[in-house]
Image (cartoon, rainbow, N blue to C red; front, side):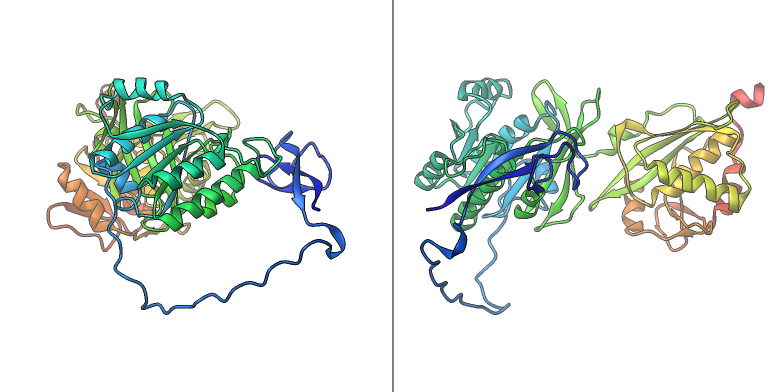
Length: 460
């Protein structure tokens, strides 16, 4: 007979220990190690012997039938983030902060799938069916053909799914499920891993689309063992900036599409509204040009997005001038300031430097280097940049401006939005835009100095 073996498991990363400790050595978190009991085989090889495995049939790369078409949800932004729709038999994991709108998004997705003729099951472990109906009534989706259930027992859920055979199932959330085959409490690493594995096995064998909702930790990572993210086919994060109405659905892993693809939504009283042109959220309205603002032509996944990078450089009386960054990598800013100082003689050591990506957008594209440098120099010289010009390019430590990927896509998007000029690395060209070349940062300095000073500097 099997005996119980106790182990201490970190509830943040899943690392196992032989005894309790206050701090997890694997992830560095405090007070996350808890006692969990698991079934183990008896020592000495006692008990029944394992059965002999069967031979697996191997196939060639040319084998297999026709590729099944993707299932479209009717929500273009969600389908874009998933790589062009949902793949039958796939498993998706969606995470996000509490209150960001995960349940609202999934209810709209379920209604879209139901309207397309798919049989959808929405199983919630956090809300009663009446609460979901209230949300559906507010979103004007109460007539959508979606089957609801409130359950947390994995055995009951699997029995229901095998009997109903839905085309898509939504589990909200995976941390609330529990299996009676395990003595661990719901939400623990053992339960989350086991329940996810059983649901994915059902999805793969039946061809059902599985969408799981995952809680996130205080660091913004999906709670539970990291192995869960490896088990699913796609991991999407639903993000928002505090105090703003827009939402970003960002794919960080996708076996069936491009990673780092984004879908953009705006939260309204009637639910999430798709934003077909995200640049309208991140670009300021027209008006008199001001110094310290540069429009960056970026690419998120396969989608071009134009955002405004704002900089403020002011004399400092402090021994250690302040550096503040919002929406960009602070280490990248430090490197850029050092290159401007060493290669161009621009002294930022006696100035406070503040950099902000307008609209609450967070960017990690290396092509933002040149736009950030242009905003910094524009503020330092108090020379407004032309409002009809976009800037992009990667800056090397030598001061050279390196070419970036998808330059033609960036330029085409800028021309589509009414921009007439661009400052870009050598090799970037477009027939509809006037493109100025920047081979080094010295070219950027000369290009910025050629602009007239702002009105308040001239009259001051």
